[in-house]
Image (cartoon, rainbow, N blue to C red; front, side, top):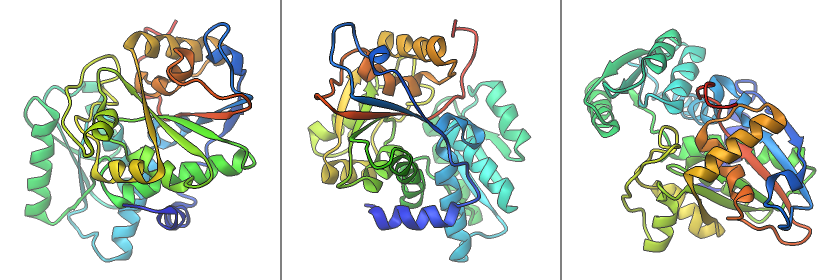
Length: 318
């Protein structure tokens, strides 16, 4: 469980290490179905401009810097299991603080992501054909070496670091934002932002219907495994919501809405066509909630859409 105090601590810790990403006003009518009610105001939080192209750098810095403060960051450095945004963020943060980084990825990881991890100075270890194979290998390696394990979403420091986005957004909108729409995979981003905005704004988690981790957890009363597939599986590929995410969602009243692959792809193209914003399919899920009518704002409601990542191919945007 995390609270606002954890997020404020993280904000102080990572200040100067991460970018304060911009917020832009958008045309509300462009993001809702024709004839449907539009938000009174709509903002886009451009976290896709963060270091390594996603919000994950915030949590990675908070995890690593907190460990250093507590004397838990030794010569063995840090270990993560991810061929995607989490691995890139950990590798980048480690390079900035002078720590070694080892990232476990499945043998099926795209060569371009492996190359980027190595370019950031990480040692890349390829194990098995699934993420779980890499995860188990990383856990064992961390135990054997004493390296600091960085979970992609279910650690307090990770969640609190991501929550700094919520503090920024609230300030940048002059405290006017009523609702924040954001994509959910394992739920670390949602947990952090919901804790940061508790009592100030509502957070709505948006998930592909083919990867409903939070939705399933809220219905079951606990995190449960789900089958994951679809266009956003590369970034929203967690097979269950984190324990921290579920607890914060229940405490703060976070809702989950589901969107189709078709709606995600359409929202992604819309962001490109209207604003020349290049986002991942997973990121586009947040905008798809409005565009597909999965989330319908109340009269006068002021909404922010968090665009959390841009590590994607360009060939299918136009």
